[in-house]
Image 1 (cartoon, rainbow, N blue to C red):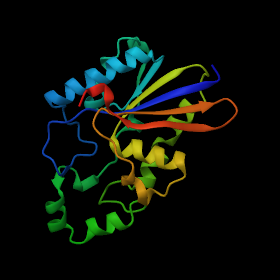
Image 2: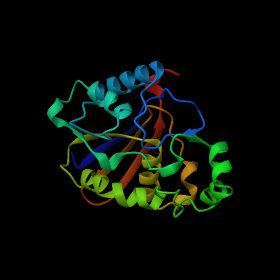
Image 3: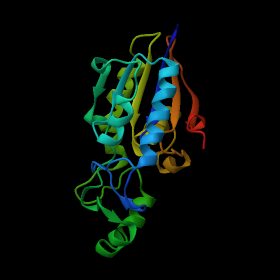
Length: 204
């Protein structure tokens, strides 16, 4: 086969209040999120992936460990695939952030690429941290099927760069919990985004 198939997934639903920025906090999956993760892993078993890279946060590791077609030795934990670091904003709601740092949330939304929360990362920082992982996968062994299990933010940043999109348009790319995206990397150069945000395996 003259291509590498890269399957990029988001973790399942988490057991955490909606509207709160959790970023790199190690938040557990909800019961629904565990079911979603098992269904996504079952789909990867059907595909027959050869190796798995995963964020080292537990909400991603759960899905990775459910992939039976890959031995534990071929599942690699990768800290560079963690979600964006929201710094002092982690664990706070939009309203709490606005009270403590008036106007900064609006500044972030107007400058998604470069704005850094206090002690946190910008989206450009996130890409600089993670891009080598994606590039290595897309230049790997042709004929391989590789799964990456990560987070909504990091998945969007990768696809923005793949498509040449400005990071300001990041939220034009939706990522449901436990969704699957696929990128094919061909020997002669092109990288093709086959599909985005597929959730048909969840039966929802």
